[in-house]
Amino acid sequence: METIQLEGFNTNLHGSKVLCQGPFKQGKYPPVMDAIQQLRTPFKKKILISNTTFSLSKYVPMPYDAHFQVKDSQDWTLVLTYITYAPKPLLVMIEDVAIPDGLWQKLNRQTTLVHWVSAPILHIRPYDTIFFSPIDDTISYSDIVYKILQSVYKAGYSAKEHKEITQELRVAAAGMVWSKIDEEKQGGAVYWYDPVAHQGEHLTDRQLSDLFQWLSQHFTRE
Image 1 (cartoon, rainbow, N blue to C red):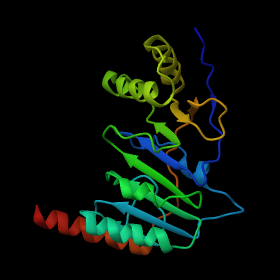
Image 2: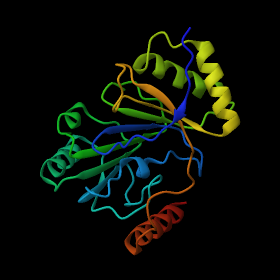
Image 3: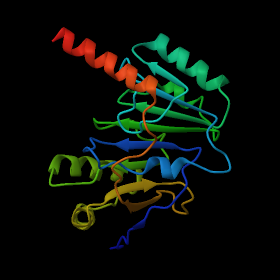
Image 4: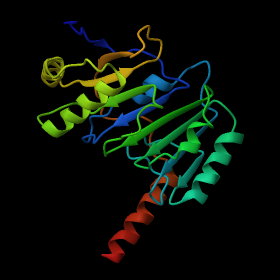
């Protein structure tokens, strides 16, 4: 049986499609921004797509050039139009929203997509890289990771291998990431990463205003 020797993840993901498979605990996030940024080709536009009314990212708080609250197909039509005509390179940050098939056709190497989800994703083929939440003692989440890796990594990935790897990562308080970017093997490779407590930038005045307005409305309804 092939033994998997995990190395630290150090691949640049600029221009790729990234899935962050949660749920993620507060202060234990994958270092997405470090992985997707390039100093020579910085993002000209950054957009946030979510199901909330304010332009505040839960995972990567920073100034965004546009925020789309997506509820139906008409909202997605606006998003696709923006993606098509926005200056590139473009960063698309999506949080806890299901992605329609039509979006994948609009993506190219000039667009970097990062999709954060709390619930398990079934349609995982379009992604180039998947960051998993640091695995704790939750058996159900470990099973989700195992099934996804069997699908994208290799069908022969055994439960024994998975148990050994997750035990090591749990002791090291590290997370697991699968990627097919710049990999020789068709199924890609599995690595470890160190979680970060914060990423992105400080909140802008506008984001703070949106947040306080939402909180005010929320508690007023209560």
